[in-house]
Structure formats: C-alpha cells, structure tokens
Image (cartoon, rainbow, N blue to C red):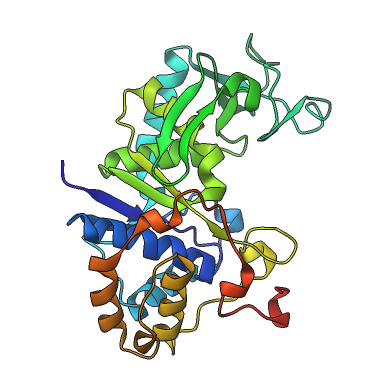
Length: 305
C-alpha cells in the first residue's frame, strides 16, 4: 500500500510554530517515502473555532511551500459516516448512552488521563439528552511508536469508558479522527507527543470497528516556560507570512535536522529540496520536549522565556 500521511489542524486559531513542526515532520515523512500527504481541517467543534481560521491556515501552509495531494478535506463533511460508526458500536453493545454530568463525576478516581469513568450508566439511563461512551474493556492496548518506542495502556484503569459523541450532539475527537483516517487510507500518523495518550483509545476503536491501524510517530512538542505545551491557549503567536525561510529553517533545526547555515536565508523551495532527502527522524527518537528557546517567535509578548 502506498504511504499516505496527513496534517489535520483544528481551525481554532492561526498556525503557530508548534503546529508548523507537526506539519513539517509529517510532510517530510510522506515525501521521503514517496507517498501522499493530505490536508484535513478538523472542524468538528464549532464552539471553539475561529471564523476564517481554516483559510488562514491554508494560506500559511501555501506561503511556506507545502504541497498537498488532492483537495483540502473538512472533517465535518464526514458526519454521516461518524454517526454510522456510532450506531454500529451502540447496536453491538460496545457503546451506550450516558447522562452523567461533571458534577456527577466530581468524586471519580483520577488517572494519568484525567477522570476514570466508573461505569455509572453501563446498565442504562433514562435521560433524553445523553452522550455516548464506548466500553474500554479488554487487555492492554500495545503498540510501538516510531519515535517513542513500545507503548502499553490498560484503558479500563487509565481512562475507563470514554465519550465518542458529546451530550450536545457533537462528535468527539477520538471517533472522528479514527473514522477519517480510515476513510483516507492513512498509513502513518505523525503528530505531537501530547496526543500519544489518546492513541490507545483510537486503536481500541479501530479494533472494535474492524478498521486498519496506521503506524504512529509522535514528535516532541515545544514547551513554554511553565512546562506547558506551546499552543493557542498558552499564547503562541501566528507564524509570520512575510518571512517563511528563516522560520522553516528554525523548524528543521528544532526537529533535530542540521541544515547548512546558508539555507537560513535561502528561498523556501531550496530549503525543501535539501530537507526531503536529508530528513532523519531518528534524530528525534526518545525526545519528548523541545526547549522554548528554539522557537524563533518566543518572547515576552507571548509569555515565553
């Protein structure tokens, strides 16, 4: 099967340096494997989205020289397929309605992934407005991450039954990303290590639905001064549109690559011509965090050190 990778940003704000790293790593992995690279906008959470953010993200990627295969897709367009998979899980008894509120679960045990759902609604609930949870039963989910090595998680202990459709009717990320990766034939997912804990839940859904499990490789994320991930929530500014070369050079450097100094001011096309054949993901093996001083946009204005 031909290699197929993807970059799937959420339109909750402009593209920032941390997102650029994920785009660069996934793009280079696809190109070095002579594969396809798809661009998917994950627009399934309207309350968090910013008007025009998708257009801004696409424009920024074009400015930085990314070339994707086929049209840009939008996750919301797959809603009928998402619902079909949810009905399949409910009809098979692997998922069920839940009317528990945050207040109801305030005393639940906490695990590495947050609240561990105690199974309160497994035997039924009568509320008209419910979320849908999938049963996290079975043995530990084990896989080998391409950068972080062997992983194992017993979901019944780490998260308990998890939500695949929210109480407000919106599809949860875990179900939507599994469905769309299957629809697009994604063979490897390259993304930030902050999403590594979500991977076992996605693999469980793939197993329950009979969908192929792609390979996974989780790259390190940039940390801000307080040890948090660089993100829109921690004040990450948009990457500048007018000077892509130096920022792209900095992204390659942060990803452990070693571009020659004269590429710092080179045209974007020249940087990519060097980056594709020289991409060495082995330089990132075992690394989980990138210091904020490798972010060229860091500074007092966005609370970074």
